Length: 215
Image (tube, rainbow, N blue to C red; front, side, top):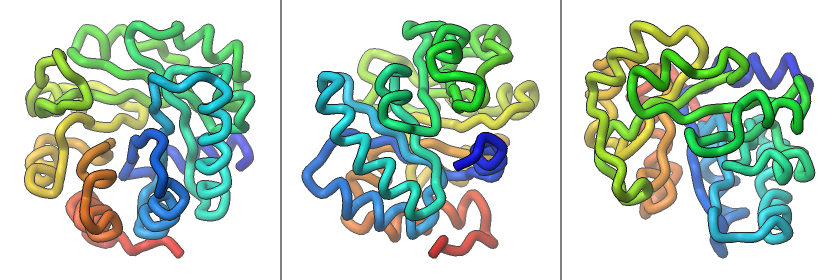
């Protein structure tokens, strides 16, 4: 994907799914990308670089086939080696500017934020940010939920693409959208769903009633 296509694709994105390595990964990625997921992130904090690269190949193949974006969590070195579209960083990870030097100007760099001060201080070199966790979630143990008020703050103050994240599912996504979110990132709502494609379709419908599955 060319650099300008990456950023156009990011700007048009609505649904971002984060998942780690799993036995059914190729099938899962094909199903959810066909159903309408725009970005997928490889997040596996326990694996070493070599293992991450092997899983990254599965992500890259699937996203190239479906015209979606592939992001690696935490590791700009792995993202670069894997040919990913970008990297996602937490507040305690490498600074955005350092990741940019590693990956180059064409890569997408994302950044997590958890409160207004972090959003206000987010590097202008980040292509997108996430705001959350909106609701309590076991994927972020020990991190308190920020609630819908932070979603409202991001909607009012953030102009680059941003994704509400944290405990969002089909039961509460309408509240998040009503608070001003136009993009969401999810983990369990899709990866733990008995029918991932149905879960994706329901989330897409809440975000954009005119959305149709991507072939």
